Image (tube, rainbow, N blue to C red; front, side, top):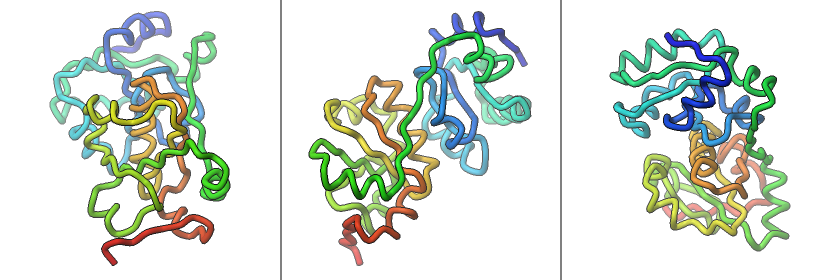
Length: 211
């Protein structure tokens, strides 16, 4: 494991993909600009393999207790270009006065209100098509997470829209929001609790075309 101080990590990050393995609820509050979040846990292996090619040079941000596990899992999966991790994690970066970014979290109640008054909303559902076809927010667009790594897919989005992103519970949508941010989209809102929360709100119109 290669621990890097803030300045060394800052230099390295400009030529690597910054992979942040903290949990989604922590990541959205503050993160290193242009980093991609794939939270360590039961879905980490699936999504790191689906989204990040194994030859990608990586610089890692992780909770102190998760650094060893992050290296073990990544190396076990064949990721050999792990250039190092940030010593002291995201808090060290912030303490050093480096720039941080954030993703705005919104509740389903806020979404219901915004849908009434904001004509620039673009709802992006990053679940799989089979999930989307079972039920989704009216007028939402389906852009499955595994397609978001394709710049051509992202380019189809209107950068002037207020983009509201959701999945089923918030894990995949946080990944998607981090990718959107990395690609230069900043009018991003992340719907907390995903469709599981949305579906319980009677003020949000849900369509179920396959039911």
